[in-house]
Image (tube, rainbow, N blue to C red; front, side):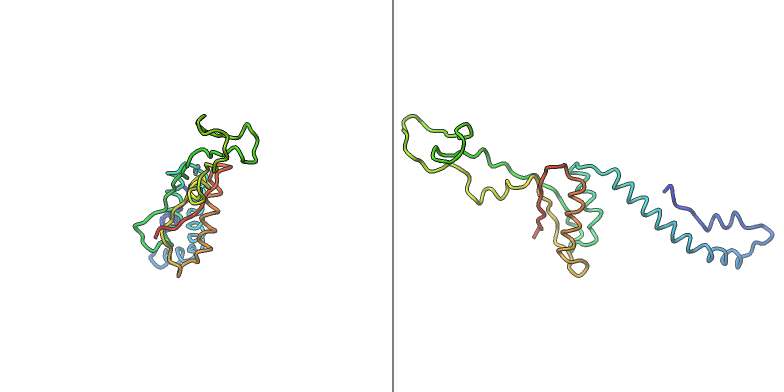
Length: 176
């Protein structure tokens, strides 16, 4: 990685040759340990920031990112987060008695049916559940000893909101 520094090698190179000794090198390395910890944390932060900066709303990248970020919390490590598009049920068809503008009234009748009031031809309530969102994020069951379900959902929602296309809606569902 670009930002990681090997402090052990640097100390060996910078110490004077006439002062070299195992105890002196170990002492200098012990003095540099706090800087090494800070450098390791910075390198980790830089790597995460670079990954987040290159993220897009593509499904394959979003799935990879969510799996990388949250695989620690999964009960079964072989399962993964995946994203599926919402289903389109079709165009709703209304009857002539509906209170909507005539231009918007999509009525398909045969001439032989006449002008009688017919029941509205629209989707049933149970069919619209799959049509209410643009996409669904399916997550494996999580280990609730590590994180609560509410906290997990909040974190996944934060990252999906951050990278999804504006105007798209989603829901998080758990695989059973």
